[in-house]
Length: 390
Ligand code: NZQ
Ligand code: ZN
Image (cartoon, rainbow, N blue to C red; front, side, top):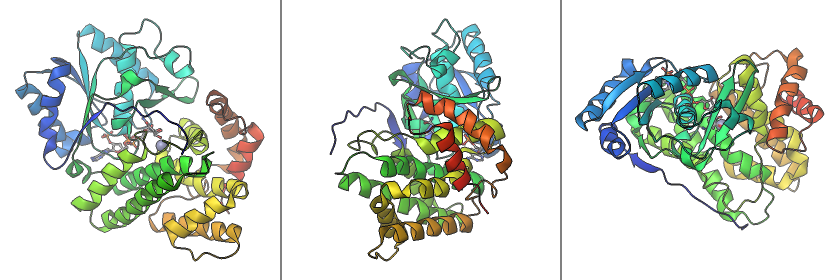
């Protein structure tokens, strides 16, 4: 196991009816809060009312700020920073999925900063302080509820970049699986894929040779996510399946999975962020379009690893030929994605393959920012061609 440092200060409150605890966990951090949410699903489901009531019962004054869009944009966060300052607020309560939480973190970093909040995304500035954020999660996927990252698109430059920093860990997050019953099935399944890929980025890209614990951690969560995904397809209100997906997605990207794996890198995310920056596809769907193609591009690099994935996740019978086993695993993965109505390549996702050169141009900026030296424009183009589909 390689050396590592693990730090995560977020308090998790998990379970049925826990939404009503948001007032209690927020009160130590602020008395005048911005209540941030998305395009209105939380109004329809009644989650917003429960949150407001709980905050007000704790003596907190609420300032609503709705309208965060999926694939959230910089201009919205910039306006919200101004509103937060004008109203002299002291904390943010984010109610929603990754897009709302990431926007909350962007506002949180931007409020105490004199310059343009994009400086944190472009790498010009580091997050030294942030206003406190608490969360009520409604869609498991990004794990933003228990990590220190956030992703925003700069509409002007078509760059989907990320912010990171210890001050951005949410102070507390409420994870009530019941709040996810209403999530549209396709978004729920995209969330499952996002969580799977968070684990697979480490699993396939590890530089360590001693990964017994980490491998089983990833495989166990992935198998559980896939089983639970099949359940919610026909039973969206199945509490146990929703619980496994909710906690599984958090565990996939709260910093535990890569502990001991050494340097890994996030190449599939690097490419996907360019897809969703340009075409506004859902993040998990974009990842699903890239994953099988990227595995084909990469498998000769470490065939045993890809074969192991086929054996342990898809129960492919081991043979003497790891490359053949690995390929069978990729086909099984594509089949599973198909059975969930999730696009498994660019064509299935409606991405114009003639535009692969532009996507690669956009992605290479992020590859350079993340230090993914192997991923030149040519290599990214090659991965995208593997992902193009028939
Ligand atoms: O806008 P509302 O009305 O809330 O509707 C949302 C949205 O349309 C809807 N939804 C969420 N919960 C619901 C619900 N509808 C009904 N009932 C509910 N309970 O679902 C749609 C998608 O929501 P969104 O927040 O965009 O999805 P997700 O959680 O997948 O977040 C995606 C964003 O997270 C970023 C992605 O790039 C993308 O921008 N990521 C953030 C990461 C992080 N902070 O660490 C890491 C990830 O790799 C990812 O990049
Ligand atoms: Zn992701």
